[in-house]
Image (cartoon, helix red, strand yellow):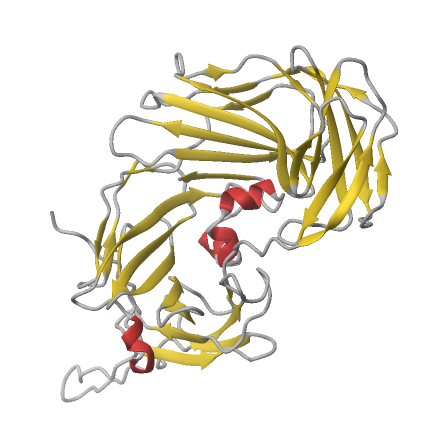
Amino acid sequence: MALSRLVWLGLAACGAVSAPANNDAKTVDTTPMIDAPAPGPVNVVTQSRFSGGPPPGSPLGGIAVFAIRPDGTLADMQTTDASAATATLQAYDGDSVTALYPHMGDAGADLTTFMGVKHGDTLTFGLRFGLSSALVGSMNIAWPAIANTNYVVYTDCGGYGFGTATSGSISEYTYCHRDPMDVMIVARDATTSIVTQAGLIPAVAFQNGGTATLQNWHAATSTKSLQITGLPSEVTNVSMSQFEVISGNAAFSFGAGGAPSNGQFTSSAFQWPGQATLEWTRIFLMRQGNWAQMGIFDNTAPTIQPYSITAPALPPWMTTNYVFSAAAQMMAWFPVGTGPQKGTILRVNWSHNGVPYSWSFVVPPGVTALTFPKLPDAVAMNAPHLEDTGGVNYVRTFDIPELAGYDDVRKLPEMTLTGLDIAVEAGQLKRVIQNF
């Protein structure tokens, strides 16, 4: 099967002097010359990328960034400022812009490319990664007693079970701690494990060795359920989960799954604390065969009402028969369907003489293949070589309904695009639907 490749065309036109009509009457075309498209500024921000360096989102300068024309010509190359971690490239509309991050622990590198950039873009590179788990300290949490009850305390760093005790110590770590932080306590019937009460201590100022006390319990709701309707016939299985989000992290949850009937799946009713400031719903749709699953991620305000989503507009389904050639420096993928999409993000990896490399791409909607941009001579050794072997980490075609199009996608940091589900959980986006 012949594979199409991504080609961005830059067009230039100019006026011309016309030939004389005859020997007696000569005319000159006075159409003004039309200049070829001119380069314009594209702003680049490079943030931290690897564990062991600055925390995620921190400026990280000294990173090579470059704009490449569709024909492989270098439009501009800069190094981001050592302190501000910014640079301005002169690029043409339709160029690609790449950042090259040398690895901290070996001789390899990570590359990331935004395809199809435009003048005035600000492109932010960098990844979310886990921080060290150093102990910040511990704090005592207390609550009113309820007969025949077990208690679980949820913070930004997870859940802590304390049995029937009416107080307990929670620990906070550098990788998850927020200050101030919300603390939720959930009471479960000791016999049935059913949630009966819940309470929230909001905006707790952390004090190592200090105490925070819940003042009032609130009855848990029993009216919650999860439902999805209007599913296409190819969906053979559904997995639905809903989470209470505490200080930006998913805490208490309920999940259900199974085969849909007539395009519908509905969970049983369940007890729900209803104390968090945000609810995060995660839905996975599966179909038989070599297909990636489809993920639907929702960020909603807390409610005691059932959660229901009707006939969600799905982006194209992604087959898992990807094509990646390190030798040809190309990638192709095969989505099926015509649903809405705002773009595709993908990552490939390879090994050169035992040294690892990866390359991520943010690609406009509708594109299903690409040839890697030609790296400048000074960094060309970081491109895949003929003898290298590698594979595909992932290919995710996505829709973000609140965004108008790909121009808005490029405004999102790479860190957000590589973790769209996490961005919804954190309240940064309202809904994302993507292959996952």
